[in-house]
Amino acid sequence: MPANDPHFLKTRRFLPLFLTQFLGAFNDNLFRQAVIILITFRFAQEVSVAAPILTNLAVGLFILPFFLFSALAGQLADKFEKTQQIVWIKVWEIGLMIVGALAFYLESLPLMIIVLAGLGLQSTFFGPIKYGILPDLMQRDELLSANALVEAATFIAILLGTVIGGLLVLSEGGLSSVSIFMIALAVLGAFTGRMVPKTGQAAPDLVVQKNIFASTSALLKSSWSSDITRRAIIGISWIWLLGTIFIAQIPDIVKNRLGGDEQIVTLFMACFSLGIGAGSLLCSKVLKGVITARLAAPGLVALAVATTLLFLLVPAQQDLMTDPIGITAFLSSPTNLVITGLLVIIAMGAGMVIVPLYAVLQDRTDRSERSRTMAATNIVNSGYMAVGSLLAAALIGFGLTSPQVLLITGLGNLVFIPVVGRLQKSL
Image (cartoon, rainbow, N blue to C red; front, side, top):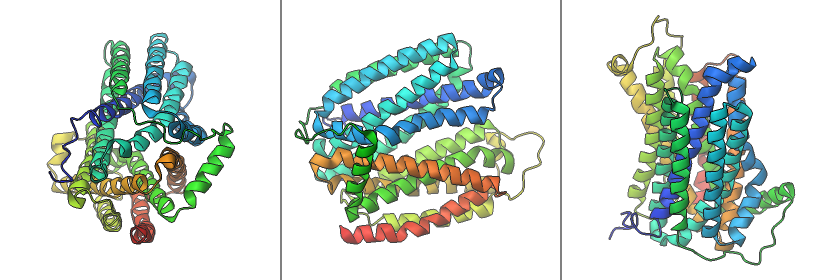
């Protein structure tokens, strides 16, 4: 059977983990989007605080645990049996969702923020396990396909959670519907988590360093000492930064440049998420299970070219149309069809770059250190995303437009070509 054929999809060594991470990503984004919508349309006016301030605070509190606790999470994932940890993490999620339902019932914004931070912490501890256990469950020639399926499913789950959370929360009885939905997803995730095969302890003699700052410093220093690990982490983190900036600019470009309504924003978000998923699966087909970084440099070039074309096609001035246009009118324009297609191509390019780099990182890291290396990746990812978002906001504050920010980000891909080029030579 071909190495790139995901024949393992329905097996117990892959399907339970696949479903568990899909349900977790779905639930995180379902709750987070519901909270963001409530902040935007209800709580911001009640507390007399600008909605962007509250929403950025909410998102920031979700990301903060990745900075603070990833090193501890990586140590625990390496030291103890991973499947048992998955079960406890999913039970933790059930508790958070019950508290989240209570927060919705009481309409308590502080309690919602606490639950959101708890979900971020929970995701912090699950991430190193998910990526660390995958090479233990897969054959080496299956690892690339497995990563592609996981990445594709993750972005589809993010899309579904975001869309469904936004649609349900403001509907009649929406808070009750969201509460029931998210508790059910957490319970189902705990059930599938119990079915993940046990793989044993990777580093049973590891002494856990409880000082989160010292352990974070030591973890980053250790991961940075290897040329392969360092370059793979940098490439992965750059793609996460690029995706974060692109997604943040989509609402402004749709509303103020293309004259579209909320449906077009949803369409673009869907195209971006599905594009990353398609690119992830495509790279698996192209590479036929071979763990290599040879697609990374061409992928970065394609990203730079497609982003430049997107910049040239998006109107430089604000659209002066009185009423926003819907999907039918928007897609009747050939230019808009090309813009949508370019967005899909950019997302596919990102997927084709990031999946092989994850596989390289897993394959070239010793089993006893794998989860800690993935934890280090999460720390750097979070740092890149935070700094990138701040830089994008600063550029817009200095008078640049959203399309110009995308152009700068797109051309930034060229800076990282030597990094992934040297990575490929090191393999």
